[in-house]
Length: 585
Image 1: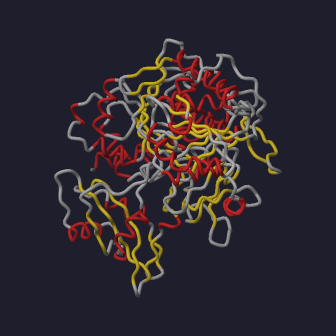
Image 2: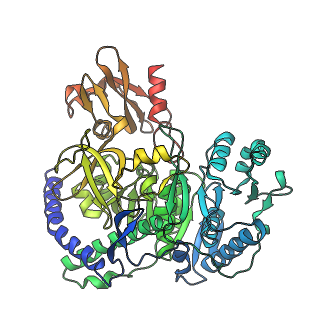
Image 3: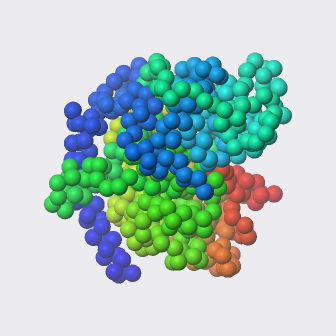
């Protein structure tokens, strides 16, 4: 423990030393004439920081790719698709959408399928056609999918056979309601219901379509996870999506340049250095993490995407070994599943250089575990929401190990502030709601002007609903989600704080904290836990363990042990609403 504490002190000093250098590199990259040059523009009547050189169309990120045609772009089970094959197929599909299905620029085209190669090819084809890619949740049932199709106005839906079966009972009603829905089915055999078209039959010319799309035109609609409310369609413009991409490319570049400068090397030498990345895609592509934070940056870096149809820790470890995966990003549960695997030590994970997570808070002790368990990989964390087109803050490597409770620094074109319940900005170190601003903030909730007005104020600040603290060095700490705060006898208790403690117990694999009703106190703290394989949990002993690290009023009054993994939505987030309902029942 003394050795780790000493190294932690060294790391904190390193962070203090490198921060000014990092900020200097961000300044160099964003200076006039530089690749990530930042200036200001008026968007929607508001002055906004922008990347001057951001391409005005998302499809330009695809057209700019420089990977050799023979290089591998997509891997799925036994299938391999080269960059050349992908380029040809994207153009064929884009032109078929335009010529055979009448798709015009700005029109919604839905995608609803599992993590198949066709998902990615369809997404890029929609961008090439100048249409709006609607990322429907592939775990929705038929009624939910009907809602998404009708709400977004998806006149074309590209789906797999499972989603065709889900939407089939509703197709006639959708069409009767005035939406002349075309169905395109990937990986389907034989005759298809409702006059659907086989994906393989899409055969347009391999020329780049001529379209007129500007930076403020729509590019994507994706739907909120729905853990607390009915899903809302989050509309992203071309600028929103490209700003997120440049955030994700620029921040790691600036850090690598700072590290080189600290080592006495030429900072410019790291730009474009190294082999193209190989990313394991374990998160659903329909989620902002999958599409905007995994698919897009790896594509822009001329890399390879290794797709998983569904999450399985053992299969993930096998793919990391066989495909020499360099990058992984998933929700914290996925990382913990792999680290807890009995075959972890048997698998070769030395190719990994980055082990990232997002979508849910990381237990702070997991950062140390990743650092100590991987030979060459640095842990990383991104904080974002569907509404910010990807990431709002990011942290990686030694910075993360030194500040494991943080989700990092704000992006170069982003602004943030923390406010109290009355809307007053709070000073550094005080806890309040986190507000975000920048060119990556979404345009609106589709067809929901009231919800949009509630989320984005008159000055352009997006109210995240997350409770945060920003320290003296600018690092953001998400304390809790506003609705996940347990209010016990007038005391606000952050569930993330309690979860961070419970997760350190030797027998706990995953946990989730929530409030349950109490007649006198209003709420009491409850925790649901799922033990590690082969372990049992003594609830009294677990409470005693928590009491060693938490004030008495924060110790869970109720411990619910789940033999199965905790219920989650398709994005891997624990469904606390379900846990709360089960507990109160």
